[in-house]
Amino acid sequence: MSDHPSIEWAISQSPVPYPEAVAFMEARARAIHEGEARELIWLLEHPPLYTSGTSSKPDDLRDPERFPVFDAGRGGQYTYHGPGQRVAYVMLDVTKRNRDVRKFVLDLETWIIKALEAFNIDAGVREGRVGVWVDRTELGGPPREDKIAAIGIRLKRWVSFHGISLNVEPDLTHFEGITPCGIADPRYGVTSLVDLGRPVGMAEADAALQEAFKAVFERDVTPVTPPFP
Image (cartoon, rainbow, N blue to C red; front, top):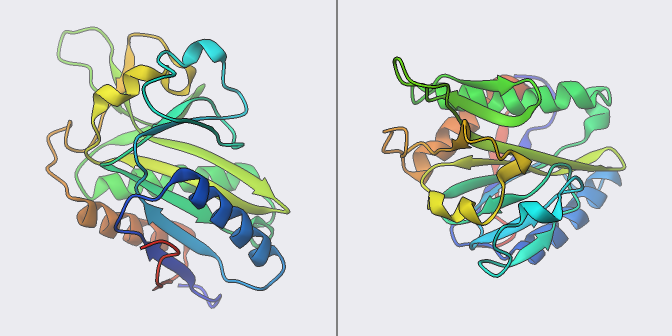
């Protein structure tokens, strides 16, 4: 691993309300920029909710009464967060990474892909479609691909916040209230580790994410107390 200070790694065990999470991220990103706090990866779950990104289209919110809807301020379109989905909020100083945003996003994608390899899942990115996908095409059947993880970040003074979400075992019907990431094509859906036949618990997913993160970002991590339990 590199000689740089380790990155703090926090895991909340109880669902964290979305507004409180965003407020914490904004404050932490500011503190990182000012040199008052270390970089942090924060793993958590949210209660069921929808978030809109800067490219969201009103028609993509199919059922606005189903769950609370929040303006995330991040890139991307509508997405769902809820129990059984591991959200990893990424508060990293992109200045330390040469301010290369394209490479930073690529590293986030590679992080997810490498974590999924631990469960023998062959996943990848697709041109023109944000996130990480798996091929569900059956022999002789029509083409089918499902998204298993979403990515949406925001930079403020070159410090990132928001991050990634990996579907471990969420209720996939909850995605029906939106057009996930604006993709309405019936060839493309949503999946999870459990939906793919991998009975993975959240702790196992967390361990895979941690090992993959250390490999991709070449940094050690230090477990810390989460901002919310």
